[in-house]
Length: 331
Image 1 (cartoon, rainbow, N blue to C red):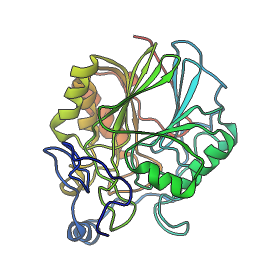
Image 2 (tube, helix red, strand yellow):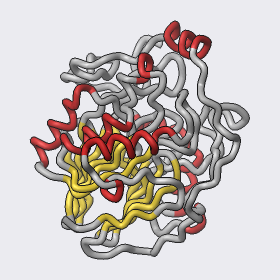
Image 3 (cartoon, rainbow, N blue to C red):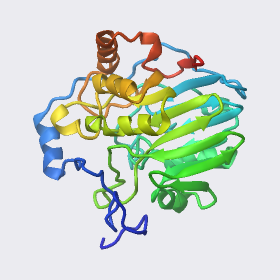
């Protein structure tokens, strides 16, 4: 593969003409490091099925005005409702997050919302192309029934269109702004991560965080990120000032020698909440798919410990399980 099959564009501070990269960052470990992790490290056992503490939710058709509600589907999939809009993040209703239907990480619990109970979906955010964030099968169902606008970083549109030719897609680069209308604006911002769908397409599509601007406040959504010395959190605060809500990953972080650059841990997530000046946060990317070595309950326990150490109440930063509904207070 001599060129980039997903994206062609000018060289920038995070694109070298073929691959995207994290400026001043750390590249993901190569194949030898993957083998070292897989064969030398012992993951904590997960039970094959773990029920959520919450029943499956049946969302309201619309949440109007400045009310802000987040309903957890599972892993990085959440329903955000405010100002009459319904937004899905990294939607996955499939049983596995894998290129195969018969192998790969499998759900430990049912989606927190039945697909049939979804309200009309206006926008879908796809943060990057890893299988636990970009699930083509789910996107096909959403496009067929809801025809939402899919907002995603550069290059991911090519992957989606190969399977869903009629999908409505808005691609964005870091620093881009897209006005959806009626007071809803999307901003694409850096995250310290990477991308791949296979072994030969590393970093051919961009990854990103998103800021959702609403009349009721700003939402900072991060699908996946390494802490990266807090650089991106500080930059977000300098650019936007304050967030009503930060949606932050808290899982898939062990072993640290391998995962640290790409997946922050709960302690770093709490520090990120403080650095970006978020009034509230919601923890995701845990409890549903076993991707790394930590115990299924460790992210929540370590989040609680980090919050206690920082003097922040658990109510300000819940770790969301499928079916959980978080009505974010106004600030």
